[in-house]
Length: 173
Image (cartoon, rainbow, N blue to C red; front, side):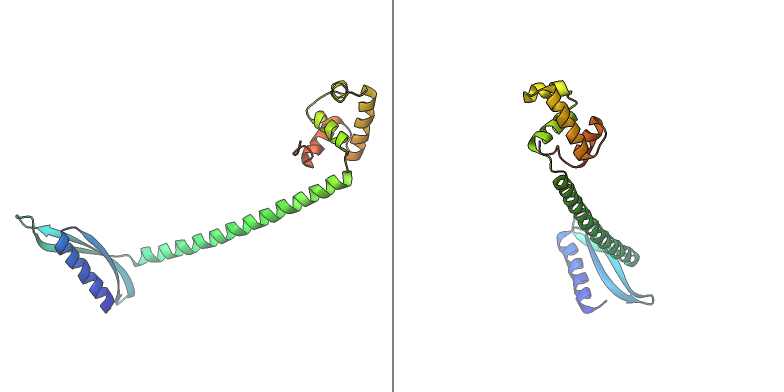
């Protein structure tokens, strides 16, 4: 052991002698296998009077465990970096999707009345129910629904409702 580690080990021994409680000390030492990391558990043995009589030291080579911990930490840091990359990519994709939706909505250019009718269609209302709610004739609603289907480039009310959801037209209502 190097001098700073010898001092730390001796301090651990003294603390166990003084306090009578066990202590764990880790240290590095040069061995025939190269530098290794050890963990020493120092425990007191008491005499009949309850005073510390001797110390028992059990030492375990934890070099492989330390290396595995370091490798796991490196992999964990890589995973965090990849997760951040995925998060940024997802945020960019969501932002791009929103821009495309805004562009599609802008190109469609629905009037407030058309948005209201579309919202009611999406709720499953009939032309007669929509006309009563908007205080207009059923024929007027029928014409507006036809224009709305053409603007949305769909063939029926169900497709119009689905397109409205896809374009995010109902989110603000």
